[in-house]
Image 1 (spheres, one colour):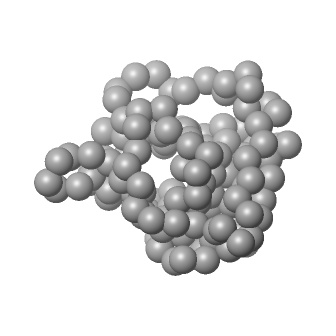
Image 2 (cartoon, rainbow, N blue to C red):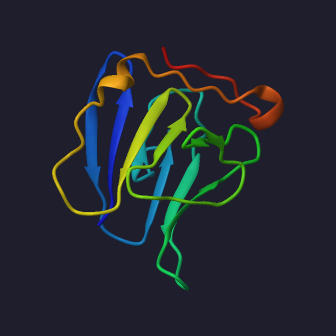
Length: 128
């Protein structure tokens, strides 16, 4: 069962355990993980387990404004590793693919800065 820990400046981290093979992220209340920011699409990204090899992947829903996965623009379907970090607008999502305690706020996150240029991804954002 995957576990996602959401970090957002000024907000306490939120850990979400998900049952199932598919998780939706977006600002719409029908999403499994609701991202409360107008910078996100109603349905922003989908994380799902591939049937063939069982790996978890993230797929952007739209070409404009994809996420950043481990510092790289996630404009295409991208495999996830345990401990992966996904930036979706002003959220940083820590991915836990194995059971265990919720992730603690990493010390480096307090000054984390990730960018995805407008030319590369269609969105420009910054964590400071």
